[in-house]
Length: 296
Ligand SMILES: Nc1nc2c(ncn2[C@@H]2O[C@H](COP(=O)(O)OP(=O)(O)OP(=O)(O)O)[C@@H](O)[C@H]2O)c(=O)[nH]1
Ligand SMILES: [Mg+2]
Image (spheres, rainbow, N blue to C red):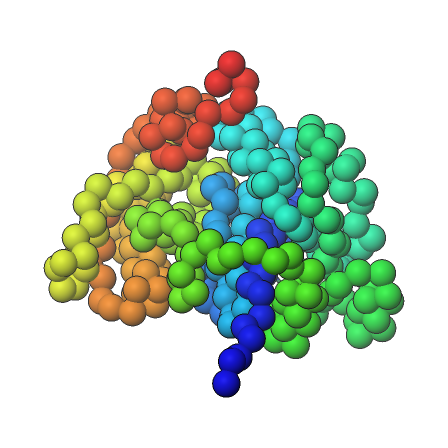
């Protein structure tokens, strides 16, 4: 008997909003995997992280963007540029705003630099568990409300989004979860660990680069260099007797093992790269595309 398959549907959905709104947490809750780095400290996401959600007849690429901010230095300019680009290339933009800080501002006022974009804009109040049930009901009358601890709220959001997808072919194999290479996630989880273990300016001056990735070895062998901007920060990252560096390494290793499903040996070194956040060459090396001003 001939079975009529439904027409496949595809969409790119951007997760946008101010720093710390809960974008990365929502991506992870939607995927059911800790793919994107999360931190209570703002501006954790620097490069967009894409996660793929497929079912029998639809595929959604969710793009977790850097927070929309007023840039003060080149890294932040690049982050803003990447966030704006993410808006431009999305079919749907979810504007995430924390429920305790509702109502959300007008999105266009948040990003005066944003060129007009074609995507439908949907407001989502995040951290719904941080307000009373009565307040949640009030907010639900005007927008979607999610909480990463409520699977129901996540399922409901995804169902609403699936219903909005347009016909289109899958762009990725149905069982792919991410579009970026494992090396990218090594850096991200080391950065997450740094946000967790370090205070003040240090996590912001911190980045990482993978020097060697040997997946044929058992355990998988990874060597990475951790960069900070000053000698004093290097001492802080290493910590007393190397304790902080060990903590950073084991946090990142646990995340990588969970994602890979196999044991990892992670070796880390710490170096100083002065003012890398303000250096176009350093940023290019760490995977940031040139901002439009630089490109001109
Ligand atoms: N209570 C509660 N906390 C949440 C929820 N979602 C996110 N958070 C917390 O909010 C903080 C920021 O979360 P992130 O997901 O890193 O936020 P983000 O928008 O990606 O932040 P940037 O990458 O810095 O722009 C973290 O401490 C999360 O644990 C939620 O639904 N409920
Ligand atoms: Mg984030």
